[in-house]
Image (tube, rainbow, N blue to C red):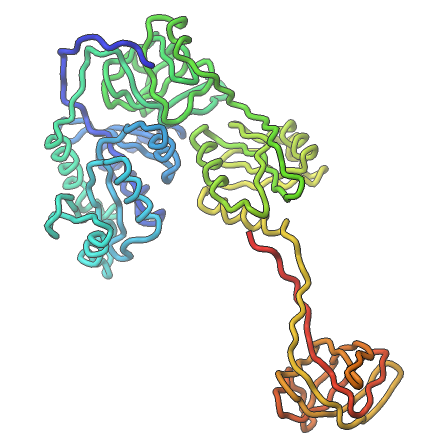
Length: 498
């Protein structure tokens, strides 16, 4: 339930909000930096704070807002809550490499969010750039560009040289105009939280995009899980502002606790009114998950820089197969790794994942003393591989016997205390050096030993196949006799599969 809307009359053209998606190495960040360099003075851009997550440029006297998300994590959280903060999606594809797995994931994001789309073929300056190949691959994903008879505009760019950047900005404004993006200044201010974190000096802090109305310093605001009064309002450059218009990226200080990424915020008349729309929220979660006593678990303490990152981590971990080894998250919290985390890790036999956060000195010392492993990482897409490997280590290792071949003993060359050299012919399969052997006499198992060396014509071999004659240096307590049959085998340890 949200505050009642009043009659709107002051309709204005809404500046487009753009999200840039694509494969990790195809130039998303380079493109965003190229646009910043093209439109924002470098001295100013150097002041952009780490957690802003969005910025705004002016092109042809019109504003364009870009959501600068780390990978898809914030955008995914926003979309999962039904918020459509972006108006336009730019799909960046390396013109020399074509579509990759993450490109196809980005296409899926774009389709599910029903975004107006622009294709940006990046790295067009490379000698092996092949735009037509990429367009063909896109058509196979049901993404038809205009030159292929579709409706998706496509522009060739180079984030490195700056080629095509003005054309891309022109296209963004054109798509915005065609779709008649508009909003009202008369409505009460509302928008979407695109990032939230705890600032050590200012407390709970959120980055948001205003969707409608004008947000003012001093306004009472609330989401489903957090309320507060706007104590400080900043633009994407970190400068304090008194008010923010539709599509403006802003930093809000004043929430009583950090809201969730993807939640919508609204302006209320009072804190009491805002509390009426508040749902229970616990930022710090010490979970008492019920574990199956017949199942192994990898217990994890999650620490991350932002709530958006935390939710993305939980989502990645929940998608790992857990039929044989489960994942138990005993704590999920934003902020640096502290001594309390190490104590909980020891008590619950858990590992600590530190995502884009630091470990304080006391916690670091304690982790070394208690031998608690802390995994520092900044990349979500590699985390699942690391966690999966740790889960596999918890699987049972079962010994498996592999029979290799059979041999008949025809001659005894030498006999010592616990060694013999004998010769024979391989009856089936193959005999391997280093393998174990079982000795059978008249179908009765007499003993077991090991092949130390395998020779033929005074040369050593690693194996000898069916029909071949060879000599074996055997080690074992049981003495081999002529006419015995030996079975060569090896044992391997195999883990269960996740």
